[in-house]
Amino acid sequence: ALFLFMGVVGSGTGPVPYSKIISQWFDQQRGFALGLTMAGSSAGIFVMPLLAQTLISSVGWRSAYVVLGLLTLGITLPVVGLFLKETPRMMGLWPDGEVRATATAAKKPGQELGLSSREARRTTTFWLLVSAAFLVSASFVGCLIHLVPLLTDRGVSAQSAALATSVGAGGALLARAGTGYLLDRFLASHLAVYFFCASALGIILLWSGVVGGLAFVAAVLVGLGQGAELDILPYAISRYFGLHAFGEIYGYTFAAVTLGAAVGPLVMGVSFDATGSYSLALISLAGAPFTAAGLMT
Image 1 (cartoon, one colour):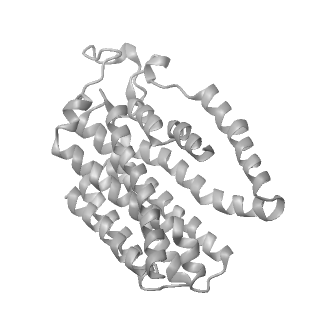
Image 2: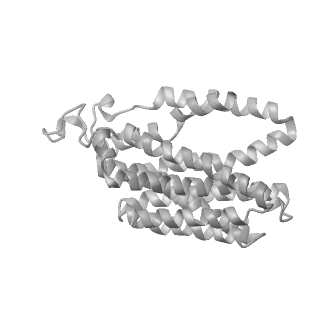
């Protein structure tokens, strides 16, 4: 019940709200701005497993939960409440910091161009994005959630396995920062192909039974695909469908990401219980980002 509640209210802290805000504030360098913003969540995923493990070892898991909750209350909420402005109009600006007095007269406050959610859902592009989002998310989260038991089964220490999980999140962090910069210069669909194929290569390495340094390389490669995905999706939606119904359209797409995050670990777990090995699940999940890359071409 607690995790259900956290999932419901936690969706308001996910990429959908702040991608909407960033897209309203930036136009010319929207990809870079989205990338930097998404990098913040990856930085958290990189740091928090190690912090949580340290807290659990020193004060126990209950106190660790309390500390993590206090960090949210004491740092995140005050920063958002005091400094975040939802739209540039709230500060008398247009996107990219352009002052209203010098802006083009054709721009009308409060009106955003683009398709309605209903119109977007009738396009092939929308369903290709949704499908690719589901597949990449399932493969990344499925591998990440099971990475510690997968590696410890191969004789890797629990601390090293936890570090590999953080390293995988580090790959997502690098991808989010780098993809944001590249999105302003190259086609989003082309970038998706390269990053998704890199993620598939990482899963294949895990399937091959790597340990040691190669396990960390595999974790980074898997993270690259998921990191790029969360940059590419909001950017592509804002460019293909506009900002008129951006929040709702991205909400539907991110629901596919969330569904994939639920299905991927389940597939890994069921497969392991049935076969006593992660091999079948890994080779199946390796095909997911390859398929997503094909959908984005």
